[in-house]
Length: 381
Image (cartoon, rainbow, N blue to C red; front, side, top):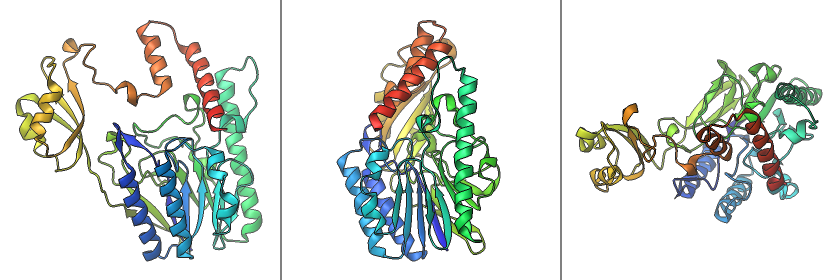
């Protein structure tokens, strides 16, 4: 059996208010062609289909158009799991209809075993805290961490047992949307559990023949193990991923051969550091029509730096972000080299506020995280 593993599509995502839908449409066109030409038998999508629980309608339309074309192939079964960005109920709404076309959707945890014929899959979606444990008064954070990790481990153990019961010697594959310790993150991921308390070790997947992971956007194997992999996102979702080579994973179960197929880039992102004295020359290296984040090394603040960089670009490429790299003694509050407010997550903003007010924030931060998790849970359900 030939299986293709992908994840973290984030349909509906934007970058500094730029629409990414054309890039996603090009990827899905490529994916349909690849499923056909590579003679793929099964497609695994490990979470974060959408960028938000309530995605824009054009992103939803793109998703269902892809599913229609997938069904038209009549040769590819699919398993789709929910991620921390997805609404479980939104993904699950058409699941009974999609099942008739051999598309199996799992928005939330439960009986997640799928028999694909050539392999058996434990299709585990993102496991939310409320699915794993009951909160109790007076718990320490250490106790909460341990309970969550133990519950995640118990869930995968139960899924492995259920898969092995029907596998009869066939390969057993796990899907997951979570952080595995030792993997490399990028700027575009949110913590999937409070304080990263849901992070697990790679030994969680002992007994599975392959583990198809989602959540981290850089393609990578985990702990040096070829059969435990993040496929990564199909497009760069932040400038921190500008240099990443995006790909999907193809697994041939006959010999457990693993191959990476590079995804064509339709919109180049460039992150560059330039010197003020050689600004025009440094920017000449940026390809035409790219989207760029430009950091300029300065000796002193220059209020019109943004205009200078855009003038130097001469319209060859689009400058989305301009940052100043100043000596520590020259840094001013109005010229931050860190992320903008729109790029920060709510918990990051709260922690910056505590720091600014010089408030001891450990306990307050934990309470804020709990309130935020409750809000996200209520928004999704």
